[in-house]
Length: 84
Image (cartoon, rainbow, N blue to C red; front, side, top):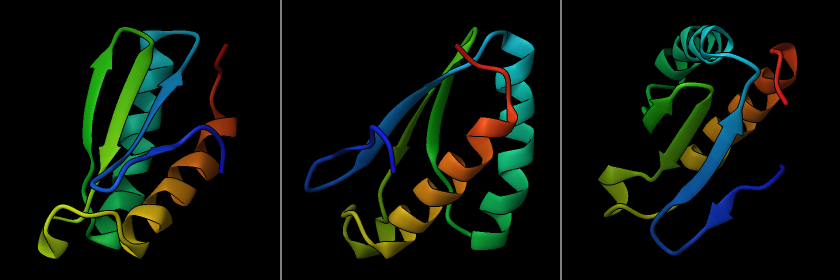
């Protein structure tokens, strides 16, 4: 997986799109997968950028396999969207 920054307590990455609309479409499609995994990210959208932070609260805010699974899903969706 590309460009995820891992610390002891979280994974984070910023995705960049070519427009606000593309970022919103990504978030909408990702939300379906997120619901299926029942593992919700912290994310912040600023125009064409989406910053995502993952950690597992039930595990004391540590990085677990749940976070890596969601990171993989998000990375897999990203190529389907217009981005810089």
